Image 1 (cartoon, one colour):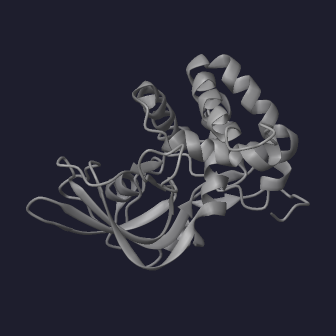
Image 2 (tube, one colour; image 1 turned 45 degrees about the vertical axis):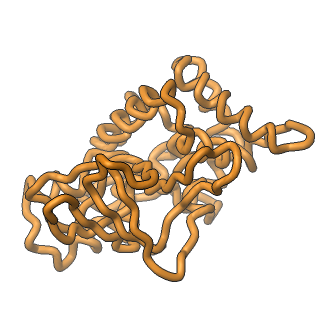
Image 3 (cartoon, one colour; image 1 turned 90 degrees about the horizontal axis):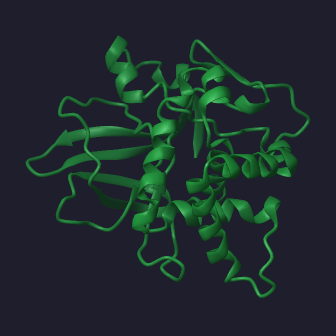
Length: 257
């Protein structure tokens, strides 16, 4: 999927102004894609940070352990390699349909929606740095380009005066159609869980950086289509990358992955 800086993405979209642009691009959401620094982070930094964040948040710790156990059940030796398997654990966790995890999902996405105010806010008050890293990179490595666009129904609702482009400002979980569906999404590039254990139903996940174009408001459903673009205000924030005037500055790193 193409990656554009905010400044380039919005070039030519001059119909968006001030508060309208801020509202629909969810500027305050933390959207790091870890370009050029993921190798550095996954070796020691994030595994160690995960231990700290799990210990400080028992609800998150229990949720992660539950997902990790599901992955271990697939392995003959039952061993988990942090560098290789934590990305899968994060995907399993975010795709799990467990009523006991709903409060964790809301807690995580609520923190995501405000942690992008500044790098200081991210470093000080974002308590899911490791999970955000593993989930984001897991989605990047497992997203599949489909031959044609597919439609997804969700209960997520956009304001009636929504315009384009838009981001949801959170990681979006999309299940099968329900009677309460209010939004129809269209995309050919997405991550969907396999319909085998440990997944009871197929879950599609879109990252916070995904940009959609709002198309129209129907009588029963709103309709939006993916632009095929990921738009980030931050990159490698944990290692010093800063967001300045919509342009991301990354730290000088030896790794290019």
